Length: 292
Image 1: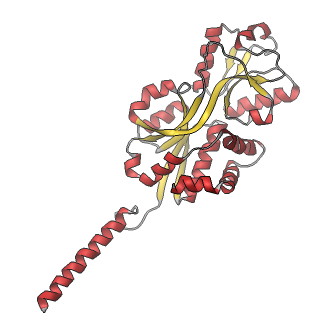
Image 2 (image 1 turned 60 degrees about the vertical axis):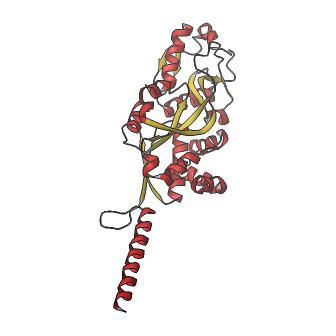
Image 3 (image 1 turned 30 degrees about the vertical axis):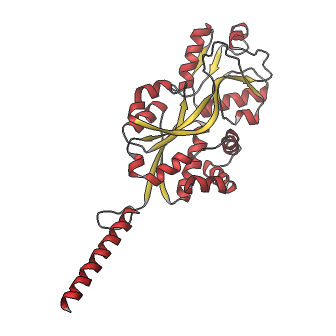
């Protein structure tokens, strides 16, 4: 009889240990055995489009129970940070043209998870009341534009493309570096006054919703064709955080979605409130991102 009870005790111990092991695999625990919060970090650049998308994804991750750290950097350090493992993910890769040089440099050391938005585009943008339609007409009206193109942050892919356009088209213009917000302010002031202005622009952007704008035609294709915005992750992130990776993998939305968040922010809402409002208005999409 004693031998029988000993066998039962051993079986109970094995079952108990196995149960603890399985539970530990489903949660993150500290060395002391206490459960820790799920955490992710998202890198992004300070463009209106990427501010909107990154904060919407942050809100979705928080709804899924994650603590989220946002890291705003220039585009070069963004790719380097992913390649070095300093940040978990980014949804701000403009491919296959705008960020091609960064991908050539860092692509072997990070993961392209997938496409989160189709139909993106970059180029030179003017109000529709401007009477030229092509970049190759710009020199004939340089005085109307004060001989300048208003750009964004130095080092951005669209800035490099514009430098190539100035050289390729032989434009008598100066590219004025600014910021995404500075470019938008310059455009808004000129538009309200009816002045001619040319800016480095991209789609999606709220300017195309608020103002009547057009891209200048680019016959040689200096700015490339249609692009997509990609989601990237550091090497090892999928293996270390499969649930968080799956959310990133499922994240995608449309141009109209992104522009609605950007427009709300431009209209005075905080990016946190605009993002939460979009998440609240699109529960089925967000539930799919989180749960599949």
